Image (cartoon, rainbow, N blue to C red; front, side, top):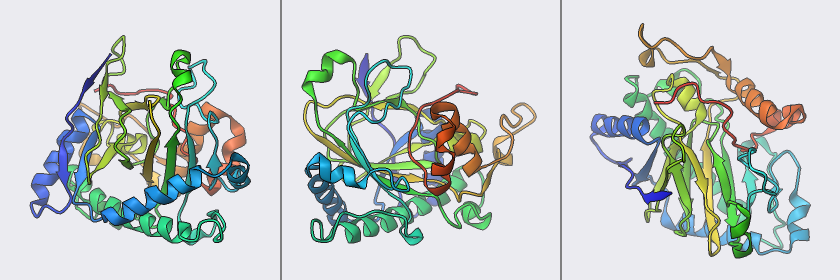
Length: 328
């Protein structure tokens, strides 16, 4: 069952920062999702990213497979992932490409001959969304009754472990009867995700995962806006005050493209429940843990010990929720 949902809208350029912070707090406790407008990323830049993404995914599969499994800055083929591991289906009907921090030199790029503007387009977009995400985190800090520079001052963003993922959902009508999703139900591991889509519907959220059968609500795209959602790390940081909401993408009836930017803290930063989110009645639910150790723990439980080396290099965004400590 599904229904349409009207998410809150947050204006990143609003001069009334405290009012904006209060709106963010409400959105993150009620939905875990909201729209972000006036974020500073030009429409022209976004258009170029979608254009380059479309060009890449139209390459023959043998060309795309040349960029597989190298430092996990790579191409992921159709059905290679299944975010909801409880499903018996063959995998999610999507293909993707990861881009990590440009400064570490680990990214792979299609050849300049084949795609001369690819690298410059992706690096420009990465830096612009990283800037928008950093500004948003200052408002999130205010929403948590913290100094707006909290995440920067404590060092959580010294070397943000952020990643960009280009996603292509081909639209496979033959798979509708097989219970296959574009992206099966999951929650994201990091702090926040900033998503932009081409407008083709498919994204749904489930705000109450304890309800049976699950109640799924459609999240329509909004022109010029990012769809922002809270990840598991932020939920842990806020002692479950902010919710990391279960979401999925239905198998589209036509091609669908989206671009997700995963904003995460520095790998060695220790994530512990914030004092402003704890009280005598609601003590810390989680012990302190380094972000990279938390990520390794989640991936090991879900995918096995073979990922230990991979995640020390880059965060592959395999998202399958393991447990829910607090259902608010």
